[in-house]
Image 1 (cartoon, rainbow, N blue to C red):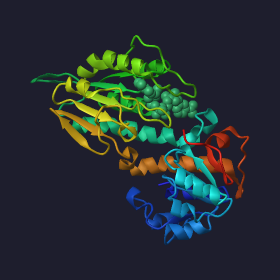
Image 2: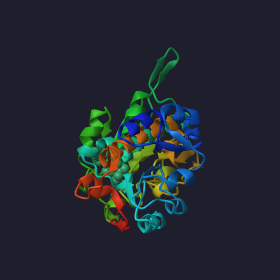
Image 3: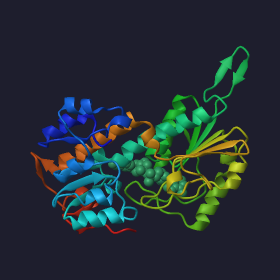
Image 4: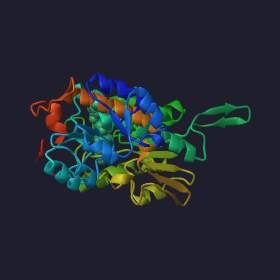
Length: 354
Ligand SMILES: NC(=O)c1ccc[n+]([C@@H]2O[C@H](COP(=O)([O-])OP(=O)(O)OC[C@H]3O[C@@H](n4cnc5c(N)ncnc54)[C@H](O)[C@@H]3O)[C@@H](O)[C@H]2O)c1
């Protein structure tokens, strides 16, 4: 949900009147009454609310049919990708409206409070380790009992960005022995600061600026897979989180590498929806590959809707704090944040699909 009862008052203090679609908060355990008590007007359906709105906040982009109800000059804020959401973008432009996307928000200090990719990656990274621990037929922590000692599970995390670091922190809290790899050199210190071991491979780092990784050549990708094979084979749990902004996820682990893991091992692929880091993974399904369970994430943050929504709603408030002052909308394309995230600005499409 893009609005939680707690953020209604914060939006009102920006000079905005707040309305919410009836039932929109149900699956995140926020009722219409909760929103009404917080000061929001509950609309019978989305179309009624959309018709008169100056600002529309949602998690997913509006369907083209809903976008067609936008008033000229209205502003939408959501996750929105130029390539995947071209139809909605065209309609927003036709309406003379604006579409701001959390997917394209610059990763700069000033935008941290608005950074919904980070807040949702925190949710999914945390969940990845919990899913792995629940699927594993083994303990995560070391147990020293009168009957003997159980060694800790060995967890390997590939991709140590926001989600990966949170997966590491959660697996550590559960007592596992954690190691991790990332193509960005800067991630080594971050991994070590979480008490995990950073795996150094004899490969060049792939840094692209803005904290992001660069795409691998096929040669480097093959070499990386070869070098990682023994680490994957020796793991009880493999969690993959590697991503490239706006692109297919890189293939880090082949089916053959999974086949070398011991029966009873677990693989959690957070990148399953964008092609997967693990060959053959299915988003939203758990496969059994000769005793190795391979879990593909689908809409992973939605399984923790209370805090995923709370964090996202606070990101929405922060972004609206930039564009709405005392009830007036001000969209300054000279501002690095607006320049970065405005896919459509007052009817003009500014970001083309790559
Ligand atoms: N406001 C800020 O300053 C800010 C906010 C968020 C993130 N960041 C920086 O950006 C970094 C990455 O952000 P993210 O988590 O959204 O990234 P992301 O979701 O795009 O990618 C996840 C991770 O996958 C890694 N990766 C990509 N290709 C890989 C490969 N072939 N093998 C192994 N790993 C691979 C990336 O390096 C990244 O760490 C963060 O760790 C942080 O340093 C900065």
